[in-house]
Image 1 (cartoon, rainbow, N blue to C red):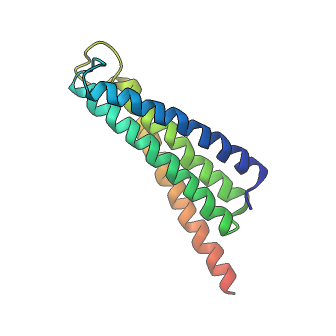
Image 2: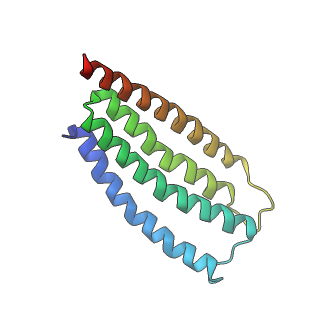
Amino acid sequence: MFSATMTITAGAVLLTIIGIAYGGTFMLRVVTGKQGANALQKSFFRAGHAHAGVLVTLGLVVALVMTAADGGPWGDRIAGAVLSTAILIPGGFFFSAMGRDPKKPNRWIALIWVGVIVLTLALLAGGILLIATGAAALS
């Protein structure tokens, strides 16, 4: 069973999927030419939208796995860290391509790298926690 904190977090994340779906309508306007965007913006907006959906889904799966394995408070923190990357990485794509006809990404691209580091560390910690929890259950 989810902790109260993770239950609230999961509910909030489900509501954010509405925003991701609305972002899909924005992407449709970009792709069909109804919303002006240069090649860099089209690529980065696509990547941001795709990463948002995938990382939200991954975060919810990690939360479920951590809860099923009784990962406790550390499992909640790990799932929260994975979910935070659903803000960081897409934010890096979207914000770094903003402006009128940008030729290259701006400094906001650093958010992508911060998100990648957080995601990597969270998944590493999650894998270790799950292996340790499973090994302890064998004893």
